[in-house]
Image (cartoon, rainbow, N blue to C red):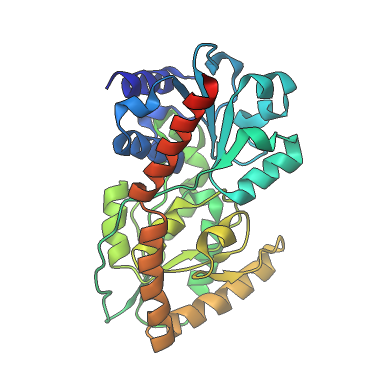
Length: 327
């Protein structure tokens, strides 16, 4: 475990990021933990794996510098990819979607010769029959990604036997992050708590989210955030949920051809009107034969295409090739 321990120690010692690795359970941090779980220690020999941080001090001269960039192009931790000096020193940049890669090429002209797309992955989710007595919706991501708009839509729905579970909290990124931003979202969380047929669950560990998804019919996600991949959508699809979202960022790349989309609109009043209509139709048509056939194919496809058994081989092959080219 020497190589993995080295990588983890460096991540835990990095205090330049707003999110401390050791206390964060966000998507990027969990992806790295799973990568370490699924690859043997020797795969990381001679590799300096850096997560979402272009700080020059994290580069090492005696190892292969691999930057795993899951952030959006305008986040400050990515800014040094616009620096010629930094890009010359980093050996490889791994992006989590083609959409994200193309944004960095356009914004920073990152060299394609150093870039590679390796998509995110999930652990297989066992199928479970959905309850028939009601329709369960879920929102399980951070609040700034669209919760305020979902609340408005949900309050205006006039459909019986529909409940919404809200698993959202700034605590997902740890105490330091929560102490800075937590109060900003207290009002919206209180509104969730005081709204009929909404169950506000706050921060929920990922293993418990998975169990909730098995009982959930629809992931209601009117996204206003440029997702660079969207693990919450991948997990939802793998659990047999219909994903009703916007086409902003990499969401179409991640969820097509199974997701149900509306075009993103910066006029949020228009977005809410269109999302309400689309979500209502998805609720009413959830048990239709056509939709059930689609969700069955979705479940099989997503669990195969996004499996860690498949993705770990991609990473292993990449690390092996990087070492060969370095010699």
